[in-house]
Image (tube, rainbow over all chains, first blue to last red):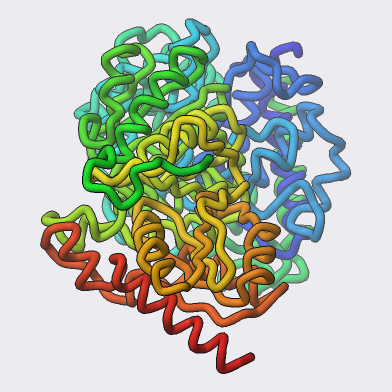
Length: 293
Length: 326
C-alpha cells in the first residue's frame, strides 16, 4: 500500500470519523468519543506506519496492532474497512446478530483483528507476548499496543509495564489515548494518573508526548520509537474526545453514547445529532482541503 | 492391563504428579522448539525448573503477576508458540480467570495452564493455598479442555498429550507424593476415560490421585461380595459420556470422587451426563462446601471425607438407594 501523508492522512481520518458516526447511528449503541478522538492515530498507523497487507491479514511480516481498550473498536473497524480488509458496507452491521463486527473485537471474527479485548488491561500483556515471540524468532516486525487512559486504573497494566521494562522490549510501542475522560467522569477525578510520563519512565520506558491529532507528530513519534534500542516506548497521544464533532468534544457524557439515542444536555436534540455530526465533519473536510490548496 | 500390581501394598511407588508434569514438559521441549514455559515465581515447586535449566532461552519468568502471565501466554500462542504457564491453581486460574476467559479461551489461544498444588492434600499451607474450585471455574468456560491426571505416570502422558493438542488446555497437578497406580503402558487419550477395574454393583467415577482410595475401597468391598467398577475419568471436558452412560447402565449406581468442591466439579460433570441420558442414584465424594485448613494430607482427607472409608460409606449408601428403587 502507498503511504499517505499530510492532508491525505487528515482526509482519511475524516473519512474514518464519518464512518464511525454512520456505524454508530445504525448500531444504536456503542462508544462515540474515544473512536472519534483516535481517528488521526489510526489513520496514521494504517496508512503510513504499519507494515501490513489488507489482502493477507495473516502475513508473517506484518506489524501487530493490539487494541487493548476494545470499546473504541468502531475506529479500528472503520480503519480496517478503509484499508480494504473487508467491504465498507459491512460497517453497518456493527453490533447486530451474526455480525463480524462485534461490540468488542474478537480475533477470530474479522480479518485484521489480532486480539480479543473489552475487559480493560488485557491487551498490553498480549502485545508483550507477541513482542517476545518475535524477539525469540529474531524477527524485526514491531508490536503496537493502543491503550486508553482510563485503562491505566487496571492492575494488570502495571504488572505488564514492570515486565516490558525489565525485558527491554524495544520492539513494543504503546500508544496511550490521553483524552482525560472515562465513563464516570474526568480521569483525574476518578483515579488520578499524573504524573503519567514520569511513572512510565520509572518503569524503564522511553516516553514521547504528542498532539494526537497531528499526523506528522504521530508518524515521527513512531519512527523515534523504532530508533530506541534499549527500551520500549510509550507515546502519550493527547487527544480531544469526540474530536471533529463540536458538541461531543471534551464531554465525557459522549464516552459510551452513540448519536441519535438520547438528549444530552448541551448537545442537539437526539434526532438531529447524527446530521449535525456529519455536517461538522464535512465542514472540517472542507477546511482541510482549503488549507492545502 | 491398566493397573500396577502393587495396589494396596505398602511398597507401591510414591511420586507427586507435578514431577510427571516437569518431565513431560522437558520431553515436549526436546521435540518441539515452539514449546515455551512461563512461571510466576514458582519455578521449582511447579516443576517448570527442569525445562528452565535445559532451555533458558525458552523460559520466561513473569514474577508474582498471574494476570500478566496469562496475557503474555496468549500473545505468545497467537504468535505460534506453545506456552505452558505454571503456578498454583488458586492463583492461576484462580486470580487470572478473566484473562483465561477472554485472552485465552475466547481467543482460542493455544495456552496450556498448569494448576499446581490442588486439593486439601496441599496440607500445612492451609485453605488459601488448597485449590478446590479450579475444575469448576475452568470447565464452565467454552473452548476449554480440562484434564485431571491420577498419578505421576498419567500426568507425564497428559502433559505430552496436552502439548500436542491444539487449543486451551488445563492440567491439574498435586504437591504430595501419591501412589503410582497406573503402568507405563496404560493408555492415555484426552477425552477417553479408562476403566481401571470392572465391576457390576456400583461404578466409582473419579479423577486425580484420590482415585487410589476407590481402588482400595473396591479391594475391601470385594471381600464382602460387592463388585465395584472403578473408572478413571481424567478428562472432565470434553467428558466421555459414552463410558459414563455404559457404566451407569451396567451398575445402576454411581459414586463420584474428586479432591475438589462437590459443587460444580468433576462429579457434577458426571451428574450432568447422567441426568440427561441415564439417571441412576449417585453419591458424591468430595469437599463438602467448606474451606480447608492446615494439617497433614491424610488427616485432611479423613476430616473432609475423601479417604478410603468415605468412599466405602458412599458405595454402601448408593447400593442401599439402588436396592430401594429396585
